[in-house]
Image 1: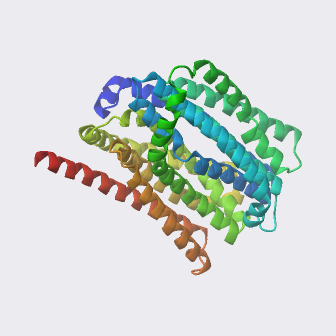
Image 2: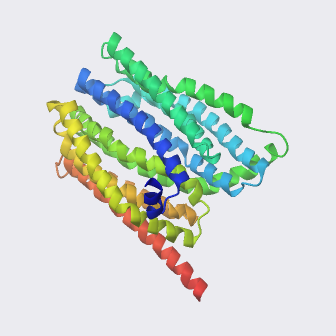
Image 3: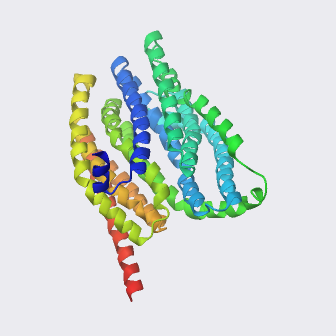
Length: 435
């Protein structure tokens, strides 16, 4: 039965298995993150949950900016030089050295600017230590994401799942300890316990395994310069797209925290916690599919497009079930205090479902080796949203819902633009070949 359904959808059993194991691991981790957010929202004050949410977004923003598209570039280059062992080792080694350099720089910056950033993001509720810890945690996330990408190059998806599972269990244990022993509403301790501290043993295990597997002998070191040029050439556009996409959501949160209030931040954050179910599915698929898509030609892209069309009805059905289930969960778990989060969740989740499906096709820009176009579209969306979001709040005197609707519409529009670009490139290439 399962094989028949997979064949009808054009999905191989191996692909389904790999996506499944990654999805289950991410589901567990996100489920625990959901429990953590619910616990902080229910057991602590609006102010604590608001600051906790801001700290998470600071860490994620630091990671997104500092990542600079390097991990995605590493996967593409590794697959491109599959037969050159020295080049492959140089590709991995350069990324490790770059991450270590970034970590040192970020820590220095954190100590220098955490006070000013705290005053800007938490006016009247400044917490310099929390901002400092959040920035440094963001730099640790760089290594966490590196190891996941490294395992992608090796097609070791079960190792990604194992690391994710261990991380999620550590987070759960520490969160239970916080609730059991109490932390006197100390948001710094809460954040450290459920985000930063669980990463440490994971990174130790990761570096220990990498040290045994990585080979720096032969011509590896001499190829680092060559590898560096290729990294910079490709990753600048990947970085531009990735940073712009993530910053668009972070700008929404920072606009709300700066010009509205912490209650609005809490309402938005509560809805985004449940919307993350779509993000984890998206990430699970991309982790498995992207290494394969790097080798797609135009015909491969068109075949991939047909498969996406086949799975659309299934995604709509499953997405609708998820939205209904999460709505009920939000209503009964978060309670009356967060009833305003439900409409925000509905808008965000419908948008996320559409953007997730359309985004799978947008990956074809990497198959076409045109990450520059993805970057340009993403920067355009970030710019238009930042200006428009500010005007909606400050000039039109509108609130959270209007900003969220504007955000979702822009994201869907950006995916339509990328879809048109991909189809146009393939069409013109075919015309040139036929001509």
